[in-house]
Length: 94
Image (cartoon, rainbow, N blue to C red; front, top):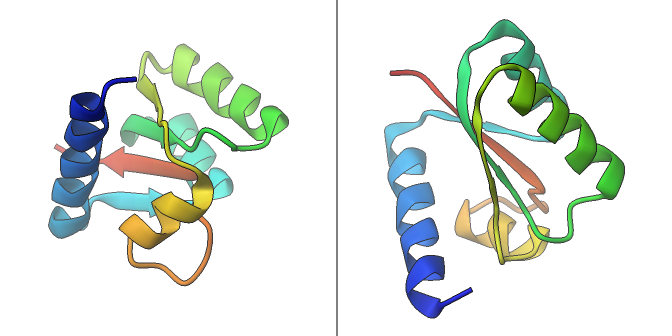
């Protein structure tokens, strides 16, 4: 993936974090996907395969955009200013 695409992903995630429209973690995101409140999902490149498959399944059922990031869960956690790794990020609202 090109550096420009990575920068765009980073900017987009930062924008959502500022708007406070974010769910962290697979359980929270899957719950939101089941309820229909999530409109976009970001998945870290080293997210466990079984978690990624569950997220993909529920995103597909809900016709929700799924973005597989080029950053690891550690890098995503740092970007989100969390002191833990973040493998899955769900955007809700609007």
